[in-house]
Image (cartoon, rainbow, N blue to C red):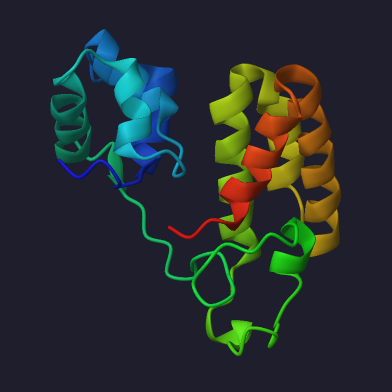
Length: 177
């Protein structure tokens, strides 16, 4: 199974969480609950014993409780000449830069994609402690709001895990792929 695939709940899957009508095994139910349209199969694999994630996902998909997510508007994080930039998050999201001879408008990033990366990175580093900040990031409607939230996330990560972890978080937001 491709570990990079992202799934989301169908309306039937959302209803199953509260109704419990499908009598799902505990591991499969846990996977259904954690599917959010952001986490990959590899991210979800920590919820099951080795080898069980594939059967849980196949079962949920065949039951019509989940489906593969498709994000036609999502594009990789822009970088100069295909390499990460060291100029900070705000400059990598600010728009076109021709200093490297590459027009960034050829490879823009959507606000939704960078919000998904930011939330995933927060949860990866802080777990459930990141929930309130993650909700604020998801609610951002402009790049300015997003930048403010990312600065706050950087401060929270730095205080919890150190400045190196905070810098790693910012680099992950700029990284391709």
